[in-house]
Length: 304
Image (cartoon, rainbow, N blue to C red):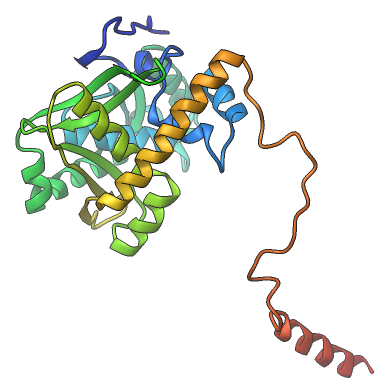
């Protein structure tokens, strides 16, 4: 079943905007879209992603489930049990329950109803993750008051571009909390992964939207990062002001580019020119292939 997409007509803050309406909105720009417009992506990839919604992926399904368990709001789910949906013709549980026709049929039916199919095991994992968040003193405190899953809409005064954002959690004091599942919550790994995914742009985007809509004067943006494997460790993260400033600059660049491309009706690729490349800096250093040269000399000595 395809849900009807309802996009709020007026700018402001809206609870209860379903994910399909939010993500399939061609009339506004999200921070995810802003990141796709800029290198290392390109406008052509942004346009393709906008016009061709991505098929479901299990990794995203589990992320939605963990969000639902932690925030208490979000997508709807159908829980599939191997003992019910993963049986072979002889009535025994299959080695790979997901490969059975009954499981696949139940998955398809759940998707048609607008629900995300997950296994009993995944449901239990997500419950354990939520318990871990509630046991973490700082993370638990961040989620003690406020509202989950709020959609924000605001028109950029410089370009007239309509912007949108979806907050995981808005605290009563105006601070923003974003829940992320990750491979590692170790601080150094978080710094690398967050930079790779441009989360400094997300933080600046949402801070500016909350401020522009008058929801808070000086809000903070905090991430609750949690590992997806036991023991589901949790780290609370906040960007410094330098990172927020850089994120804000990139957001402004993306918004201006989006306005220009909409006016021109063009969505270019990386480049239309033939480019000349060299070796990476590390590969061009003298002596970088010493080990390889030694191996070749050894092999020549053996075959001589």
